[in-house]
Length: 320
Ligand SMILES: Cc1cc2nc3c(=O)[nH]c(=O)nc-3n(C[C@H](O)[C@H](O)[C@H](O)COP(=O)(O)OP(=O)(O)OC[C@H]3O[C@@H](n4cnc5c(N)ncnc54)[C@H](O)[C@@H]3O)c2cc1C
Image 1 (cartoon, helix red, strand yellow):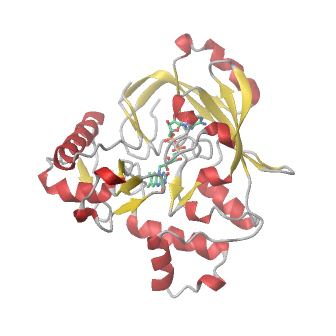
Image 2 (cartoon, rainbow, N blue to C red):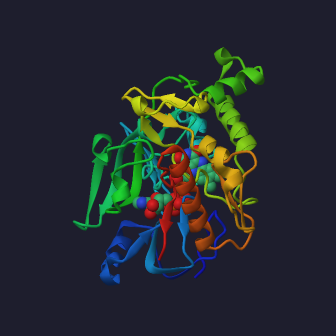
């Protein structure tokens, strides 16, 4: 079967298992060599043309309110979940509006945008542990959330449900300069800001900077923003494009680094760097896995040679 993915690559897989109920988990036992590939909406993966593993997709779609938390099925679309929060006075998550993908994938790379990360709202994650073959609930501390990272990157867990908690009052996080500036530029008074208006603003801001994958196939940011030791890195050319963290580290803008070398790249016709955001790679049509992989390697090598900075690819590269 063909696997639809936001990068528009032609991908075929032999086997597919949809987990719709807890009973479906027993079907995992029949998979030879335990060779599975867990996928959600395929907006953060770069897949090779033939996938030999069995693709497992969680399709739990329930949203249930419990006394302490909101339980959300891993198969719920993230955009629908944000809509649900806005309609039910669940505050805080507005900055994560319009990120494509599924709820089940959100903890994997601890999705984040405009100064907010999903980990701030996670109470616990309900999973199937592929090593013990048991279902378990992992609390937030055990998830080991970091910038675009968590224990779920280990591939030992299938996330079935995510349990969320929310602050009791609406206290918008406007610490991210681009968001604060958008509100000023659009004469939106922060005192009269509502969750709906903040969410709408984030959506508009995103649409002005990021291409819609349905029109311009892409996987969002192609590299993580690299972290370097502040003392080791004294580069004036990145002023305005680096952010000091409170742990002796500085985060650099990967987009800026790419802008500085993009004219030295040899880019195949099937791909292009998005005009409004250098961190986004677009499939112009018929790009192959090898086209993408070799361009990413080329960018990584150029940036390392020129700036002595190692870039890490953000989406998962799945070569077979
Ligand atoms: C236009 C665009 C904009 C984006 N903007 C942002 C952004 O602002 N911030 C951000 O953080 N990300 C962003 N992304 C990346 C992407 O939206 C997120 O990473 C999203 O959470 C991926 O969801 P998915 O369901 O498509 O996961 P997939 O791409 O299918 O999978 C991603 C990873 O999660 C694993 N996975 C998926 N589901 C499960 C599960 N149920 N259990 C265990 N593992 C699982 C997969 O094995 C894979 O490693 C963007 C992507 C695009 C295309």
